[in-house]
Image 1: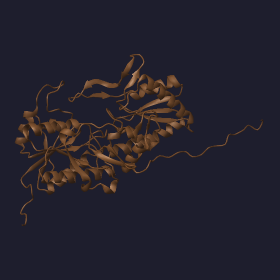
Image 2: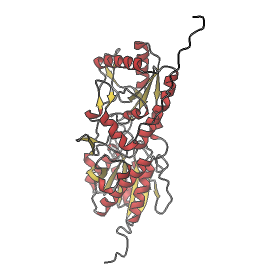
Image 3: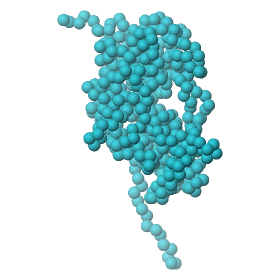
Image 4: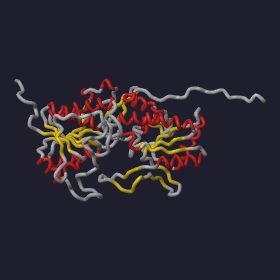
Length: 413
């Protein structure tokens, strides 16, 4: 029987983005909008995350509008607004959100975010029955997507989130650039990389030429600190250029001699509405101690927002399209409270809907680096991690200055 109208003609779907930006959010918005429009939905964009559903609302119409998904960040803007009461804001904002969902006649809500944003959406779904679908987003790549990585006959539970592939290329390229200045001055450069709880992004520095790394999964105790310094010294000595770039995640717990305990370094004492502090400065602490302890010139460099800035890269673009295809499938089957995920690590060409699945939004959680990906005894990422990352970046991309000059001898000798 011929369908006289589109499946969801007369229905409205709204999209919001919460938390930190990534290069892949606009691509996610565009591809979700396109799939929803094909199904007949009118598509709204909610500006500034959950904040856009407070008060009178801040909502725009994305239906039949041009949209540049290659441009990084979120054209809908973002915030860390928490709908539920928190220490920073004790007010329950859910009634305001429900009021605006009704006022704007929004039938389905798609939330692009991490564990906080999608966790809040899941609670609203369970408490109020509002149809929601979560969409993964983080450069930290620490959402538990249950993506399996096959390596040498074994199955490793990995993670693959939109935003990470573009950030991975950015950090790899940034490391390759720092490598040349480190070599010029025979220095060690300690590169601070975003990663509050996990070292997925820190590891991408390997593809830019780094050798050692520190990740949040392993506390740098007093004993480990001594081994780390000895490893740095030996690796530096063996380096032909007498230089190193050492990436460290911002969330690394480092033993503080003065305090007599391990601690993190914070850029600010304030926390957001989900209770997260702002890290920053661990690279300076480590570089200073390397210089003092090892008598090797060391500098700190904070990559900061560089990783999450700039355009959506090719792998990310196709990844968002593939997951948006799965969103369309969830909408058709009215399977709400779900988040689309990639089932297994695959190269660019195999990013297709048949390689997707979905998981319950209430079971997302965070996923640390698997033990198979990092060797704490050597402070190095493993071949298994390199294989994982090669699915996204293909090859390591950095140059070396290959020449070795003969030593000149004075004529009077």
